[in-house]
Image (cartoon, rainbow, N blue to C red):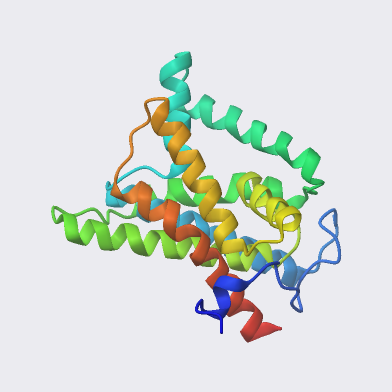
Length: 221
């Protein structure tokens, strides 16, 4: 008897009615593009909630901060370099990019900027900020579950996750948790700032992505 819920045992991105037949599809259906952009927008809003919560940086930002400290770079440039490095890791994993890989960067960044401009969810209560950050992690995962099913190419980090899952055959949730914990450890070793929100993201994003995929598959498959 398996003690883990069904969604924690998911080992692949499900195919649903709007899924593209191939990531390198430059003429996808309108419905496919809609769910791709919807998922990415939800993803970006979740990221903004984590930023608003002020309880800790996400693992990849911690890594970028650590790199920036040691090489005297800006965090933004360090994020760019780390993203390129992750894309290079796709090569041995035979992971394929697509339209979604490009839109991932544009839509998520744009949504974060718009959310930070329009809303202010931060409070003086640490417990409320902790709740906001926790919701943010869940929202990021749920958004990932929606946009990944479009099969138009994942973002750099989600592509690393799905590529490693395909090679290792382990459930998506545990593959993502291992990636995030590794990134946090490297970033912290380099001098990056780790907070409770960082640990929440590292431990929660894998199950949240798996849950998002599970819900989408159950509703629309």
